[in-house]
Image (cartoon, rainbow, N blue to C red):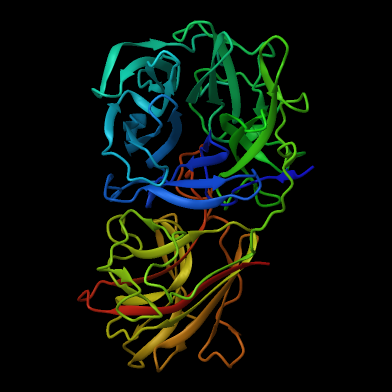
Length: 552
């Protein structure tokens, strides 16, 4: 029997929503301030998952100015058997200030998982994490968190359900609150509605998306409830199986719920699927902290747990516990091997570069990033400072290991100190680490140096400067469990030399960035990037001959 090793999708792949259509499985995950929006993965064996496409890639949303951790939240995939349509619902969180959490939710449909997708259909602004349910009678329902802003009321709110006419794009009737007395961990969100036999089942994320996270379930014979909770009174999946009652507590951290006996933390936000073999699994998010810390640089990743239905109609983990595992039984009768390579490389020899690349805040367009101006190389036109949430010229991939190298080669001829190009590590506009070429007015030549952003502070490395007369350099960085060491060489034939001693970079993590005390600052994770800045005349271009990452 093949065993599934978690996470099945390492690196930034949070809030997974899974569906099964004719023997193929698809998972959609959140992307927050990164473009293109909403990753869609595909698998036929539950072990190997391939990034298939992005759903929001034609300007459907404007993410410029998005503060961490707002943006595109909690996509929900569904498939309507009657119409043969794929549906994708999502929230665009546009404001989190004052805990107002202004979020607009939409849905799109397509006859093909790769699109083209319809124009977004507005659903509601009542809260976030919408999910569509297509009932057997042809009716459609939205489940969503109704966000609560009033003092003295249940925080962060209730799960609500309403019928929705997808053809007319409008609500049918009123919203119905369905989680009174349902959840004990509180912070109920990400509702997923299913029907099996005589019951409707409501799957919830609970406990806040931190160390108390979990998956709870309730059921009702009526779609609008009332829903009774699982008889255990506990989540059916979690990483922290000690009891917690936090109803009314909006905290997303709950660092006291860290489980020292588990490699997996934060297991929660689940999505249920029945397989072609008749088995049941839940896809859910998880995190893996750096050893000895509560910091999660790889962000929230996707995992699977095998489930079963009890004789009295309740869903539980296959091993009879509620503690999520790093390894679970795979599909019965399906034998396969993990075929992921530890190496990712793009030599930019094709007109279209890899679909793994993402960009913060803005869209990727050929007027600033392309492989056609200098065939065989990636050209990036420098634009805003990396502190910008408007037009940073960055191409990045999510980190998926605690120990790896990142390497590129760069040609760049700056003529002003505010022109830079290079490579490094990025979380958001306030938090990054950047080895780059720039212009030195002292030596009148390009130099290689380092710049850092930490919690919004700009930090120079004045003692780490190297003159690069020809404006061509190879840059390598080794990320080693939160420590970064940069290396360089001027030609392919020479040895790598150290540009700087190891730099502490563990703050580039969900808990290390600019969060409120006791809460998580971000929901994304560490990225590697190449990029360029031109705050002079917007005339400079940088070319990169390859982009390589290798897990060590």
